[in-house]
Image 1 (tube, rainbow over the protein chains, first blue to last red):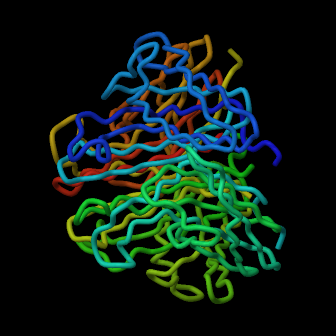
Image 2: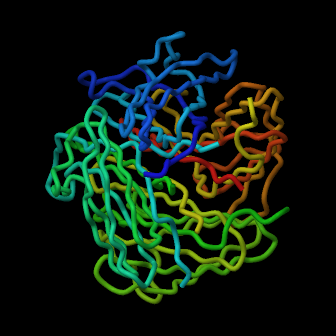
Length: 124
Length: 124
Length: 124
Length: 124
């Protein structure tokens, strides 16, 4: 299969919803990066997180197997430091092999309410 | 009419919501692939589904008539096997003629609540 | 100002929500095409609507002034015939000058519930 | 780091939700432009706002620091004049250096209801 996608992806509009309501983990609020690696090679990804008022943080390292998808909750990224909750951020994802990246937010700040938003990341 | 679109499309962020609430089928939760074939030739599509922890499954075969649109609920795909509910997946759609593909999710896991999210697939 | 955009745009995932709940017109469910014409020339647009089980219908004619935006509810298109409610469709928009097109859905089928979804159309 | 993005971005589908319900500012309805500047140079942005029935307004000037993200609520733009509430608009964003732009809407017009919609702006 020919390689599908790009090696650099950008998401400008990150903001992990906080607090959450409803049962965890299925209704925990999150920002998610959904990565599809259709190649025959494992993808080593480096994520850099940008903020409004401080220097970028990273790299966060992620691995996506060959011919696998991986959906990563940004809330779960803790090394080199936890991504900050309820705060504007953006991120740049770099991969050694071509991948495709989609952004998804689940917002459950209001009790009994669920809001979703999604879109492709920008292939740079 | 000149051909519109691309022959390969990628959706990284699939996840069929489960369970559903409300009347079926209009409020059943779903992931949907919306395909527009503006050409004068019937489009034979092959869908491959990628998971986090197992090999890709496919091809799922779909047909979209010439000068037709088709909205396929991923939940309804059962051959070669049902796409798994409530589990991260992604997919690659290949078409013999150029088409355009949009992704749509309807989430009704919470009673009396409706969440929608949409975006173009990635033309690879 | 240099021309911005493209002359052909595609939306595969149309489906006007029906019925609606809540005060009209602000909470009426709709699919919307949002067109920005940054050029110095009025844009004459032709919209063709594609269905799952019948031939395409059109052209619907729309005009967007020079240096103007226009947000058109697909529900309001009636000539040559009303776009069908609660039925899958897609559309192709052609413009004499470059424009940019965004798709937006507002769904109020459930009482007291509002769902939104948006994304760029595909520039073909 | 190589420059990421484009110098001109277009959002056709603006419409600031009005009125809002719920605690301010976190549940105030808004349209938001999320800008990521991964370059080593501060980005000076000029925003032009387009309406349906009047000439464009602008430029609105924004600054995004080097290696910073900035999420701007369109509701907060007041110079040269406040962007109008509850009214269709679109906008063109120009930057001296490459940036990436995402659009996000939060709608809280219905009490106890939250709707989100997002998507990339169009890189022109």
